[in-house]
Image (tube, rainbow, N blue to C red; front, top):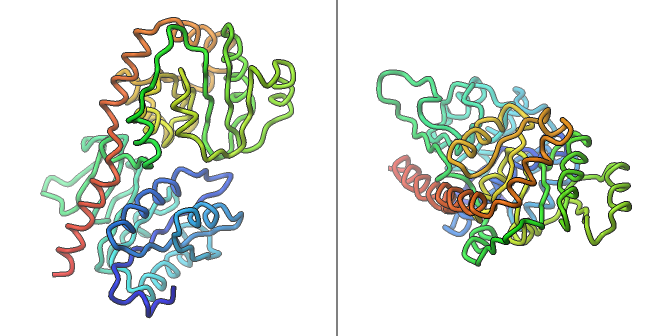
Length: 354
């Protein structure tokens, strides 16, 4: 759609990237938020370095506009292009989501005088946006001035971005077996240590009569060899599936990384393990273990012989423990985070237009 046709519409510009290295989490949560904004009458555009076509493909599924750029993420050229596009689109809202955006970048965006929203997982960068979203922490994690801040901090799992597919799965009965046999392993859309995937798979298959589904970007030779050894009646390898909600609904136990999948498994109520693969995932893993929604493991735990196998066996045979995890997870994440955020965005943009 041409910019002149957007005059009179409420226009939102997202600045986010996705790739095999970065992963898909940043893009996926922005896409969920954009879909909710579109339902309220907004026009949403994504400004992105779409070098491998991931953003274009995923956004086209929701009929979202993608504007490709070619800049180093977080650079002055990146910032310049964002400002130019915001003015061209007559944007009244900018949403940023990247660990590469420093305080200088965010301050420059905020100085445009329109409503700005920033997804923040690390709490390490000074915030200048009107709205800061961080589902995995609380206000004490931010070094705020003593005086009242004009910024709005939307913190905690009640603001997690959950796709409607997971909310629908939540409403359907999730059967708890006496002994868990159906296991789902998904460690994110970015670069993953093949040894960790293989160790998780071997541990899952060590359970008697178990069936494991493993979601990967690319299957390693060793993983393919494991599949051949056990057969497809015990192990199924999927590449970049779009059926995650259905797979979760069928799973007795899930082994996931500490990204957005954690909020999804909590929303449905699937017990299991969270493997913290990076610094930004640690707050999620700690929180879920603290409330009793999931057990947290470090990569070193997974690679130690029999550590994961023993814990999997104990959880698989303990229906009461899995039931408690299900309850705690569903209490933590109700799946309405995106709606809450859009309500606040609409109130804020209305105030800024007065």
